[in-house]
Image (tube, rainbow, N blue to C red; front, side):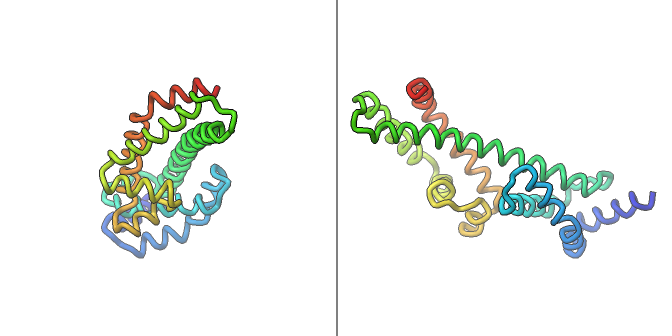
Length: 193
């Protein structure tokens, strides 16, 4: 019973904006959360970034914390969900990278058919059009992430926006680009299979 009351008091103090309570929580569970995330990702740098992002979201949304829920259980669940989301995003990213690499590789071969060269050129042209149609900030965030290799937190710092805004803008950009290229992607899947 006493432990439950301590958990409730601890969450209440975080909800009220007590930075010392957040700091104590961070130091108590950060290494364990990083190790837990690393089991899913097998990449300690990415694991640390995900855990830091979870703490950022916890603090940002602290007013919504449920005093009846275990804070540690909440954090471990949030880290697990973030890891799954990251892995799913990586899977999609790798699929598109592989698809584009195969198209560009086949278009680089000298014995290419005119059709292969045409499809590769059309895809690149359509991709550039889709990119140009994105709102300015959305396009800049996409370019920083995909072409310049910045992570979401780095983009947020450079553009003085929240990581959540970066995440939302990237999601919008990817959705719009996928919609613009859906016919070409289908054609490529059939073409390179």
